[in-house]
Image (cartoon, rainbow, N blue to C red; front, side, top):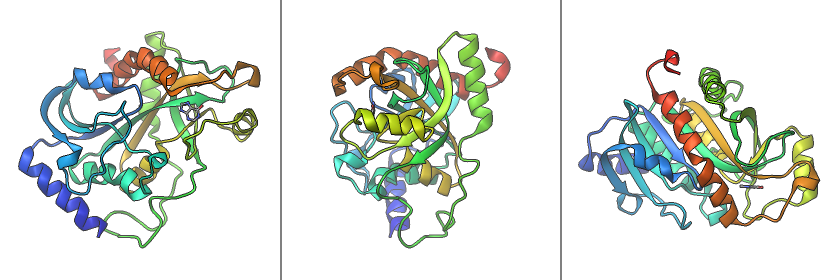
Length: 276
Ligand code: HPA
């Protein structure tokens, strides 16, 4: 069923473009600015793609964009789907399956997140080295289709170490404030209570957000190389740092920091580490 749906989506996309992307990019809340840097070869509205969910969040555009970015062939999701919007985990992660079917070998995922790690401030970048899944559903639950991946994916080497290292070196050279850290995925849509933020710090969480983990699980299942960058929109630890946070503020902070993400992603897509 899922396999057939992926192929129907793929078939439609192939009537629109023959572009062959190697890297998939998921743009998080407030991070749509990267789209302007793409030399676009084709752009397809989600609403035209069979079985694609349609985005309900205003800040997300809802297009699959094919093109070149810093010389690399990419497909970018401008607009992503969140569990809190009411989609099933299969819907949230369907685009990742389709991008895999389009031929991508690696995926770069961005998101906005609150920080619960020590010394991580609003506007900082965090390159994700691991995650803790506190979401109540799993996109891999149900009958496993071996054509898509194994029943029990191992999660030891989920986040690509070489890409994290490259990103960290680049950030250092460019004096971009960046950390490596652990992402905790929660369902949302509410933000966390002070006690919850403290708990997340205690269990080893550096950033917390409402996305990414489902996509990472499916990307790992599909055998993709994975890189995730969080932009900290609100500092949530220690407790005295917590302020009331609105989605408007999250978008404002992340949009301001967005150019740093664009630079890091472009660098990762570029030809050689010597180019810093
Ligand atoms: N919690 C959960 N998700 C978020 C946060 C947060 O504090 N900030 C941005 N996304």
